[in-house]
Length: 98
Image (cartoon, rainbow, N blue to C red; front, side, top):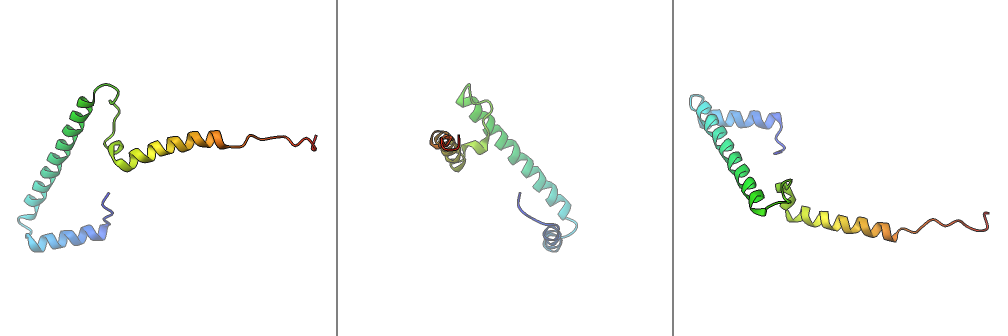
């Protein structure tokens, strides 16, 4: 998700130990984890409220579907797929071969 490797995580832990100290680091990590859980719950609540307010037909709505690029890509892709079916030349048999 964040493209952070093992070495980078280790470096962050070392910097955290130096700046915060080994005695307060576990409490800070626990506070950070609580904050992330709270943010995740808030995001889920907002997503559920959006689904409820949109009404029937949007039960399977995903948040990433609301991103403008994804919306445009989906609709342009549908149009391109439909036009490809209409524009493909139909195979013809050459009468000289028969």
